[in-house]
Image (tube, rainbow, N blue to C red; front, top):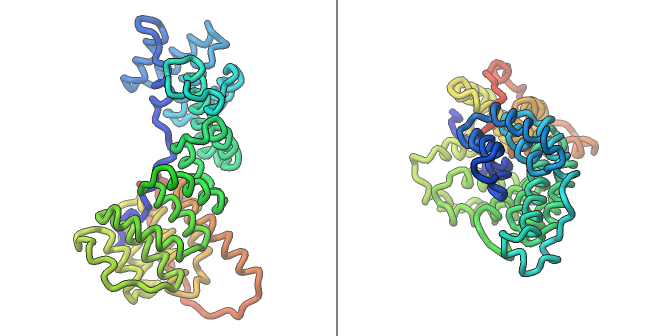
Length: 363
């Protein structure tokens, strides 16, 4: 049933392995160039050894720590990468902000401009590693430092807006996306703001942004799914012609049908289990989708258990993980107020028989 990746297509948080090298390409024919060539050749383990030998000879060269750190990160060795980037920050020279540089910020050949760009890169890289290690607040501190270096760096503002959303700092996230929209309106900022509003419970505002996104990218079916979820959760009107521009062959219709058709929880569970059996990587998003479906189509009594299971399946720093986290927080707050419980069908046992895999979904 569910063969659809339901993510919103927001910009990935990960920074590429070569990003840390782009600003300071090493001189040719030297030993550092050999390490750089190993990275380009995909021989990251060998490159780590080459950088380590260089660091042994130049222990105060913060650029070498940066290069080794981003290489270690690419290998998934996050603790070691964090240690290297932290050391690079400790050793790095004083940096002027973009405001202090003035027009010099436009000349990347200037040493002082290079230092600013490298400092921004260090903070951004560390933020991604800290998020991967489950330390979102520390990651945000690094992004705050990066934004402070250059408040006009819209890429870093977007990065911080996404992370603020995942950390539940909804108003702060919306502030970042609003600032981006004022300077450079684009679909990524629209979707970022829509996600933040949705997770903050502003379903009317989220619907407006998702509707705008569907017009900007009519073939992106996942935006239509999130638009429909926002409308249903906000008890908003659903225009009859809303999806007429979406080709019937688009896999988003699977999610739309699941939200509008009269399935029972048992049928939804069976369909999801069948979909996950075909593609184990859908386990994370499938469970989150089921949790939201239960909230939308039933009284949601069984949704917390589903979202709790999703936390074990969804990698930290993904939209699905953020949805599960904030839904659980919202439900815990609602549960604190006494209400008259209503009966709801038990979640079928088939859900717990579905194959699971902790594979990063294609969000």
